[in-house]
Image (tube, rainbow, N blue to C red; front, top):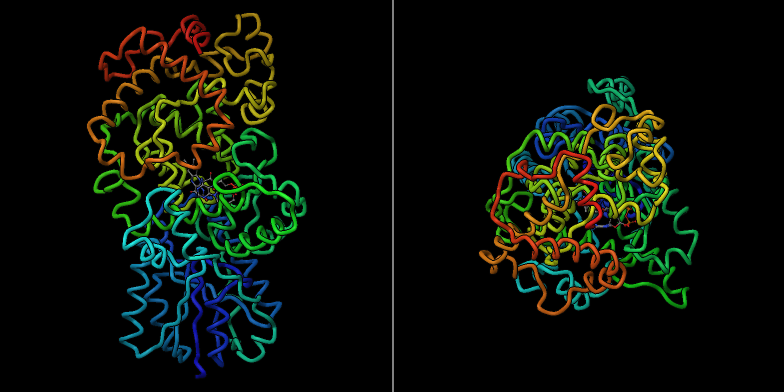
Length: 558
Ligand code: FAD
């Protein structure tokens, strides 16, 4: 069969391990690689900040350059996908549309539109799964028709399914020789990748994660050069506040499909095969790819996965509605340097370490502010380069103990968590320069610094940098009480995503983080038992929220 095909790139912006593209090339005599910049669709589905738009545009430029090197090119058009496709089909005499199958409901909706268009115009469609290791439908089927709701059950299903398929070969110049991309006279102007300014957005940031497959593969190569590091990787031992990422930093590329997850997974398998020992899921690097797969699988078959209401696996919690507190968290004005530095890095660079995400997510939700995980998810959606429908919501439910995570008595301390791996506060000094002159002793709790220290640091707390917005010990013990109550009332929902036996991630975490968490737990529990939760729901009524002296006291309890 010799089709004239439009290959529609959506995610999957790559030429390596692209089975849909390869299959389409094999059955076509003409192929137009197309990206429809359907801004209303994308921004209607998820918030997309300027930094991620920049990443997307760079990834398109890179894809265009790579296609040109093979004798083809990328056609970028703006508008509604269905309308653009309809026009192109007529203009180019198209007989087939190829695209990757995606799991998100909004992409599934678009796929239905493409299929309807194809039926109406008498076109073929050609589609393959390549954004996940497995076809999530197959996974759900293998689990008896519903998604495995714990990582342990998920690993069990995987053991039945066997290893994920190997990556397919790269698309080559020979493929494009056999299957031409026609040239149009005015194509340079008409189909060029727009700039950020063309989208009416501004770029005032340093780009640390340049978009595109080329950078993805370079980064993969760089990080995987150290086989010992890869083989011994244990997520819980990586450092959240190192000045360069202590994990691979590949998430932006995986999330947009500039890097194939199967390439990532099988490169790891070959490194493991050459190593005497290697770490295992859930903490190994392959284990990380499987967390991604786990959330994709659960999201694919859970209604309203990105919402609390109507989401059958999520605890229904009466979170506070407090736009002012949310804004302080979002704009790095909480008064806790560890939290504010992370939120600053997120805003400036679009990426933060997994445990840093833990810290700010716990603080916003069950730890301190008792604000809905959906609000945090939306902020991450806008600011993260790797923002991902399934993974973001899944992790937010986890961190807020709304689903998946059940040791809800473990609450991260916004002072001690960061200090543990960066006692000198280098990370805080970098992202919060206003605090850079504080001695290390005070940098995590500048409100404790005597006046003369604040003066010589040229930073007066309450004037140049805010006081802590809550008293952590008071807020966390009140929230602990609230959470305990919720979980007692909604035990059946809580049990859905919980293993009766020990959860493997828990086992890993238990070993690695026991010391800190137990100390912290003791602090909170001691405080809770000496002063029983009294059902106060106004979090601003915390008696020691605002004065440096009382915070100093509560800090010592921690
Ligand atoms: P590595 O440790 O090098 O892991 C390699 C890859 O495994 C990652 O790139 C990612 O694709 C996958 N992975 C790692 N950890 C997880 C995890 N916990 N869940 C699912 N997949 C994982 N990750 C996203 O890709 N997009 C998101 O929108 C996102 N939102 C998050 C929100 C919260 C509240 C939390 C706590 C975590 C979130 N994560 C998200 C998961 C995780 O923090 C990032 O994937 C990871 O930090 C990315 O850095 P890395 O590539 O160096 O990870």
